[in-house]
Amino acid sequence: MLLIMCSLRSHNIKLLSALSLVLFMSPMAQPSVPTHNQSDFRCMAATLYHEARGEGVKGMEAVASVIMNRAKQARKSVCSIVHERKQFSWTHVTKDKRIKGNIMDILSITHKALSGILVDVTHGATFYHATHVKPFWAMHKVKTVQINKHIFYKEKV
Image (cartoon, rainbow, N blue to C red):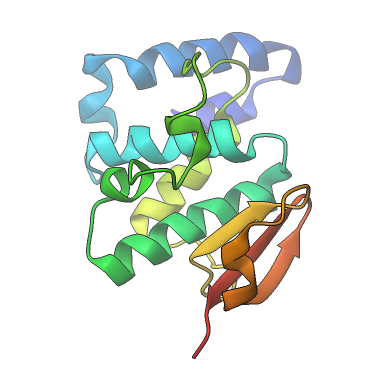
């Protein structure tokens, strides 16, 4: 389905994005992504949308990497990681949790992350924050990279 959508002309992208969202969020969509747990797929996609949609593909890949690094380290599901208390602001701050607009990059990155083929551009980061904030915990971590308006960290060794 993705290949068909990508090959169409750009003026159809908004319509296709809306169609993808409807299919993605409907219960009928479950068989279309059989290799992924549907809950984890939705949690990852929603987090990329709400936390990093303005950060470009590399920025969204970085946030996906943090989620996957945490999940692997803690041996927890993506949804468990995303919904840990006050870890991802969209889960406790955002009132409108709907996903809208062109989400093709988000769906693609989500698929890569959950398939284990996403390259970790954060060099093992398990934390990040926006550049406009200075969280107290950052001084106790090692900065790995800055990508657009997010700074990524991992634990000190």
